[in-house]
Image: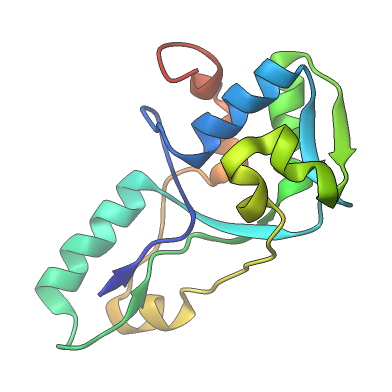
Length: 148
């Protein structure tokens, strides 16, 4: 079994990061909850795909594998990249206002959920090579085109 982190990113992504960009754009502010130090693990979709191939080819039966490249990206850092690209102010959103600002993502965005793939890397020799979440966001594809 391959467990994916909350954020599987890459060009063409229509998941959490694309939704967050859209919400921030609509609100006119790039937000984070509290002090923004809570972390989300992430993996580029190509690195995740490579791990699925390795799992099929090499993983012992019953293995639980973690497709984590970035063990924990602070949400405030994500908000700062989004704010820079959309030319929006970056601001803290009070926990009690998270549902209003972030809609359905509000309940999830405030969770601190770092994760590790150290055992997966050791077992299969998997090494993510694609850009991390912040570098991928900085490429700009989340801010242009249909998913933006």
